[in-house]
Length: 220
Image: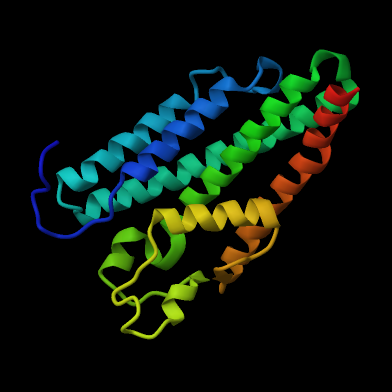
């Protein structure tokens, strides 16, 4: 890989790229009955995001490419989030109106895929919007945080120059989808609270309706 044309520090993109690939893979394994677009369709926005992300280190994190990356990643999250909601709706409809067409194993694997996509999509969204994005956080530019992480409240000498990275937002999204409430990081803004509420609702409906029905079928 080529070295950045500038010494300007940037956050590593490989965990984010891996997350996007996982999202695409999980959407691929969903049964045709709960997929409302062709199997290849999510790869178009996915490859677009990966291309924009690849240009960030190659161009030394120029402002233009950071804006492009931010826009296409947010669009990717919106599109994949909508696809997840539709897939969950189809799963619930299949349980209610076409229960014979989806067996317990299909319901269980589909519900796991929906839950994982929910976690991954919101982790990408949290990572991109908090404090204006990863590069803004690195350079400590003044911006209102959306979440307060416990490390930020530690004395200066304990964890100097600490800043949240993608893994912190992945952990935040995992906790939100699992505990249905804030755990270590507290939401500070209205949009952060609304996003966490939406993620919790998706996860809760998936677990209460789809997972419980799948376990009921497999256990009978």
